[in-house]
Length: 97
Image (cartoon, rainbow, N blue to C red):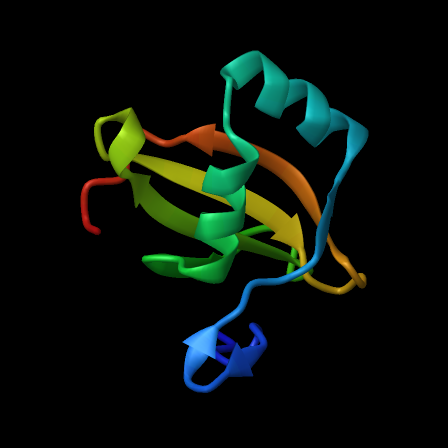
Protein backbone atom coordinates (compact mmCIF):
# COMPACT_ATOMS: atom_id res chain seq x y z
CA UNK A 1 0.00 0.00 0.00
CA UNK A 2 1.33 3.44 -0.96
CA UNK A 3 0.53 6.31 1.37
CA UNK A 4 2.28 9.20 -0.36
CA UNK A 5 0.28 9.03 -3.57
CA UNK A 6 -1.35 12.47 -3.10
CA UNK A 7 0.35 15.88 -3.34
CA UNK A 8 0.67 17.56 0.05
CA UNK A 9 0.92 21.32 0.66
CA UNK A 10 1.37 22.60 4.22
CA UNK A 11 0.32 19.21 5.56
CA UNK A 12 -2.98 19.21 3.64
CA UNK A 13 -3.75 16.72 0.90
CA UNK A 14 -4.53 18.66 -2.27
CA UNK A 15 -6.03 15.93 -4.47
CA UNK A 16 -5.00 14.20 -7.65
CA UNK A 17 -5.62 14.61 -11.35
CA UNK A 18 -7.71 11.89 -12.95
CA UNK A 19 -9.59 10.88 -16.07
CA UNK A 20 -12.67 8.71 -16.47
CA UNK A 21 -12.64 5.79 -18.87
CA UNK A 22 -15.64 5.55 -21.21
CA UNK A 23 -17.01 2.77 -19.01
CA UNK A 24 -16.60 4.88 -15.87
CA UNK A 25 -18.30 7.90 -17.46
CA UNK A 26 -21.35 5.80 -18.32
CA UNK A 27 -21.52 4.12 -14.91
CA UNK A 28 -21.00 7.33 -12.93
CA UNK A 29 -23.78 9.05 -14.87
CA UNK A 30 -26.13 6.06 -14.54
CA UNK A 31 -25.43 5.78 -10.79
CA UNK A 32 -25.71 9.56 -10.27
CA UNK A 33 -22.33 9.82 -8.58
CA UNK A 34 -21.14 13.43 -8.20
CA UNK A 35 -17.67 14.39 -9.40
CA UNK A 36 -17.05 15.99 -5.99
CA UNK A 37 -17.67 12.64 -4.28
CA UNK A 38 -15.11 10.98 -6.57
CA UNK A 39 -12.59 13.76 -5.97
CA UNK A 40 -13.09 13.63 -2.20
CA UNK A 41 -12.70 9.85 -2.23
CA UNK A 42 -9.44 10.10 -4.18
CA UNK A 43 -8.09 12.90 -2.00
CA UNK A 44 -9.28 11.66 1.40
CA UNK A 45 -9.98 7.91 1.25
CA UNK A 46 -11.12 6.24 4.45
CA UNK A 47 -9.51 3.05 3.18
CA UNK A 48 -7.32 1.98 0.26
CA UNK A 49 -7.26 -1.58 -1.04
CA UNK A 50 -5.24 -3.31 -3.73
CA UNK A 51 -7.20 -5.06 -6.46
CA UNK A 52 -7.26 -8.86 -6.09
CA UNK A 53 -6.74 -9.53 -9.79
CA UNK A 54 -4.94 -6.54 -11.30
CA UNK A 55 -1.92 -5.02 -9.52
CA UNK A 56 -2.34 -1.77 -11.49
CA UNK A 57 -5.74 -1.11 -9.91
CA UNK A 58 -6.44 0.53 -6.57
CA UNK A 59 -9.73 0.78 -4.69
CA UNK A 60 -10.37 3.99 -2.74
CA UNK A 61 -13.30 3.88 -0.31
CA UNK A 62 -15.08 6.68 1.52
CA UNK A 63 -18.49 7.06 3.19
CA UNK A 64 -20.51 9.83 1.56
CA UNK A 65 -22.50 11.86 4.09
CA UNK A 66 -24.77 13.36 1.42
CA UNK A 67 -25.84 9.85 0.44
CA UNK A 68 -26.65 8.40 3.86
CA UNK A 69 -23.00 7.51 4.58
CA UNK A 70 -23.06 4.78 1.93
CA UNK A 71 -19.52 3.76 0.98
CA UNK A 72 -18.32 4.94 -2.41
CA UNK A 73 -15.77 2.63 -4.03
CA UNK A 74 -13.65 4.27 -6.74
CA UNK A 75 -11.45 1.86 -8.70
CA UNK A 76 -8.62 3.43 -10.66
CA UNK A 77 -5.46 2.58 -12.55
CA UNK A 78 -2.55 4.19 -10.74
CA UNK A 79 0.07 3.24 -13.37
CA UNK A 80 -1.00 6.00 -15.78
CA UNK A 81 -0.74 9.76 -15.41
CA UNK A 82 -3.23 11.14 -14.74
CA UNK A 83 -4.80 8.16 -12.99
CA UNK A 84 -7.69 6.59 -14.91
CA UNK A 85 -10.88 5.81 -13.05
CA UNK A 86 -12.21 2.47 -14.24
CA UNK A 87 -15.49 2.53 -12.32
CA UNK A 88 -17.19 3.88 -9.22
CA UNK A 89 -20.14 2.54 -7.25
CA UNK A 90 -21.73 2.45 -3.83
CA UNK A 91 -20.57 -0.73 -2.13
CA UNK A 92 -23.22 -1.64 0.42
CA UNK A 93 -21.27 -4.75 1.46
CA UNK A 94 -18.55 -2.64 3.12
CA UNK A 95 -19.20 -2.31 6.85
CA UNK A 96 -15.72 -1.93 8.39
CA UNK A 97 -14.95 1.77 7.84
